[in-house]
View 1: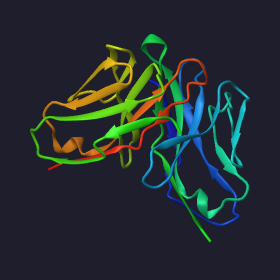
View 2: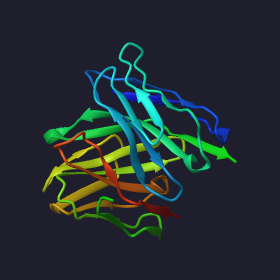
View 3: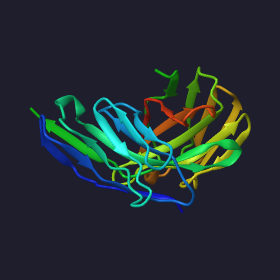
View 4: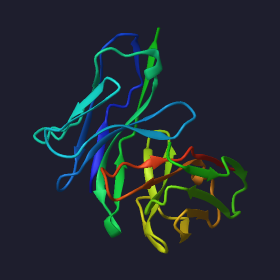
Amino acid sequence: GNSVTQMEGPVTLSEEAFLTINCTYTATGYPSLFWYVQYPGEGLQLLLKATKADDKGSNKGFEATYRKETTSFHLEKGSVQVSDSAVYFCALSDRGQGGSEKLVFGKGTKLTVNP
Amino acid sequence: DAGITQSPRHKVTETGTPVTLRCHQTENHRYMYWYRQDPGHGLRLIHYSYGVKDTDKGEVSDGYSVSRSKTEDFLLTLESATSSQTSVYFCAISERHGPYEQYFGPGTRLTVT
């Protein structure tokens, strides 16, 4: 079945450091790919997405490129801030019944950014 | 923010008791999902709904049932709670027309003693 493997961490960085969180996937067909972020005590919220090969998703200085040849969707940010401290989840869409799109998540990567 | 509420937000219950969690949305979205979040597992899909009275199983459905009698409410029931069902439960909604983004509720922390 479809699956997502992401770097588990935890990852600890200093402010203004470069961030990479690796994500690779296994899927039949061409799923959409997502990065969700979870701040402490909250639900998940979409950070960025890409729906086809070579698409680049970007938001709030984060970006990720859908690489079909390497089945990857790595998350990057050039200069992290303390406010980026959160858990990051990579996910792919999986077709369900009735036109639904289920999400398959990686295990999450906890990022802590120190001042 | 998407209008999704979950109730209760916290619950402690004993092994063997039935428990019902409620997800309520004000967005009129067609699709609703229940996930559980556990350390080392990320989020895993329990059940989902693709319309009123239309539901299907997810990856970890054993021991859970769901019902959706109206668009805005999706109920998750643990028929006889076990300690392995101690978790944080998230509801999510999505609308078909768009990029299939899912909007998540604030979560319910359930402890089974």
